[in-house]
Image 1: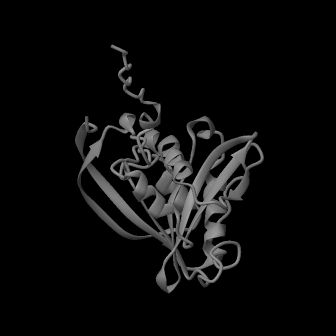
Image 2: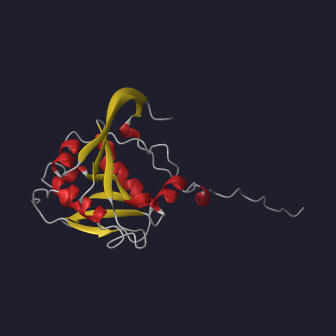
Image 3: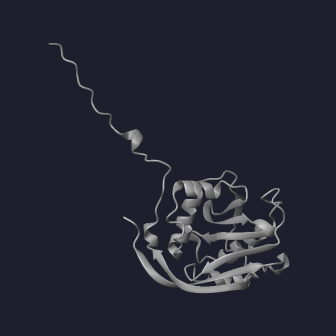
Length: 212
């Protein structure tokens, strides 16, 4: 059954940063936060992080994606997925995409619920933006330097998301409001590349030959 949908009035903002010098550091987190670039594209990793980080704050735009959609999304040289690690655990992640004309988009950035409210958010966004400006050096070899970092956020994101971005130095480039049909985030699908039941099917019994 398809996820139940509710109509919500949503405001979306496009935020941008045109100079790396505009970035303002976030407060140091309560514990060490390390960052690791995912060296092997993994649809399983990105879809799991999308659900873990996003479903609690109403990310639902990728619910309709098939496994093939996820593979096409992650298996591109212009996409970089970074994991944030704390206390031996994956604490959050972000996705960066190198786009034409020097644009780098932050598609997703956030923490898993266990690390929300512990002072990691501002530092996570700061480190995400720093890496966005390091395109062509730290990641995305051959894709050229970043000239502008931008992202979209909305009233379906974490309630503190927009304020966090503005504190880090982003400015509002555009704003739009409208009604959007939003699936129930509790019904996040987990598309698989195939049916795992197939290899476990019991073959039909062959008739036993009888001598007459």
